[in-house]
Length: 293
Image (cartoon, rainbow, N blue to C red; front, side):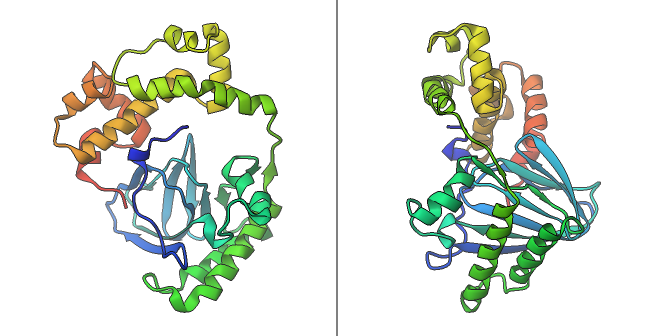
């Protein structure tokens, strides 16, 4: 549940033998958006090497200066932009869980990977370059990868794998752990018909009453359960989903913005533009004119 496949970044990083990609990016003065809101299945670390950047991860914003880092979990929506258009640079390390363990059902994966994927183990998102010693250690380990050649890591496989294991060790030792109630899992499963209904009918008017009736629950109880499980209210989730579908149409079709707004469930283009800007960080026209990194 959550993010629709159409909005997933299509690029896969690295190779089957070494499922990790290194990307070094530099942006000149006057740049605004670095990349718009998107998600992918890989884990990702960023380290800023010049200037400052503003990252948005799900609903939170983080300002990173030179030497700072950030962790993006699998399937997390994220975007980045410059600070007041100043020049900046960073490198990104994207990798599949398979670099740590090829078998997601292995004992190792069940202990150290799956809890991160399902939210039972919460890694720190922001890593301060001048922060606690362990954060500095993580940044240093990532910088060891960052100095490798971008397009061919074959001769650096041992270095890359060793650094990723060491990073994962530090992140795990300093993670927060949450015990999920069994009822939470059942609530998630119980909400599945509602989420599916939203996905199938997002282009039409949808009311709280009809969503609550699918379960059935009172509207108040439904809103409480939905927000507890999804971390968004039902209407916030629906609005975000509509915007993500509009992004797909902006990328894949030449339909006019007004038509896309209507097809995405908005009958007022001004409101669509406002919600789009608040969600994605740019206007629909700007989004169409720029592709994701």
